[in-house]
Image 1: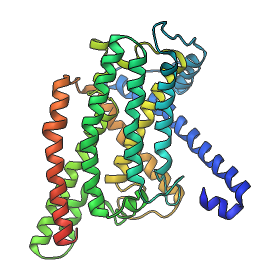
Image 2 (image 1 turned 90 degrees about the vertical axis):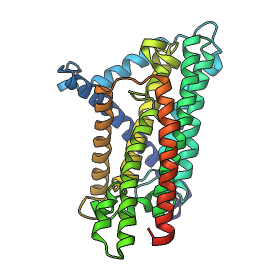
Image 3 (image 1 turned 135 degrees about the vertical axis):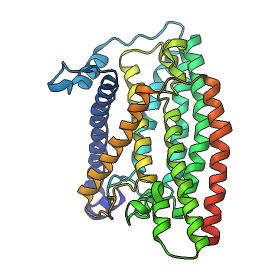
Image 4 (image 1 turned 30 degrees about the vertical axis):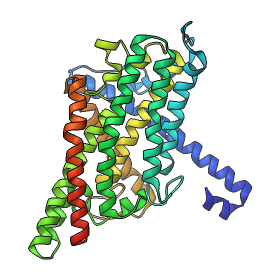
Length: 360
């Protein structure tokens, strides 16, 4: 927005900046509508069903019909609930889910705020998302929502730790907290993408020790990509880690007492976070808007490439939901603290040693 103000003046620069943000928000909401339909279609296909296929051609308008249904339903607030906090909780969840996208670049030069500490901003805002769920569970004044909120708080904190250390390994390789520079660092091709850098390690020259260390680092980064993927499932309450809303135990967890528009806000916030995690995997490990054979400088082509990668990663999310059984809560915590935490700590040490002694 600062560039727009400098180019068009305070008035029109601000108007164009607001229009840019609104256009981005509309794009996100339309993406959510079709990605939710895609989620249901994948789940149905795995079970050999058709899924939504009535509203519109091939069921394409199903998400819009669901949106209208939620909007026109009556908002019911339990008599014993803390009404103010009950209403604020889903609004807070939605707002925090939207503002995290401010630093996510969609293509070369296409970003609302290209700040140098974009990763820190993302970690700071995403860690606040748990407050909306805790507030919703507590304000409902019911045991199932409260238990779901407690589970969610513990789960998010547990897996944010491993996500943070995985991101540190990427930052060590790039030397920057700026998401655009992280994408540019992977511009040479597939062999330079952080998730597949072990391929590039065998292509670059140097001493045998340097090549071996680069290959080990590449294997470590490949593992980090999948640890980030699994942690993202837990962080966003996706199956098989949807314990905060486990219907067999807690009916619907922290969402039990919510209906109509307030429930819709929780749902939109949750899916915004899911798509954000898909975008982060694409940016951190899959080259962002770069193609497997080289860099992309055209913003329109770059946007289509990154958008396609986001859909591919979400397809993996949907497939995991379709055929992986739900974990027990003790298994979930054990993976986070006893497996992912020590593994990511060792990974940080290995990548740090490679960058320090061999220059990455």
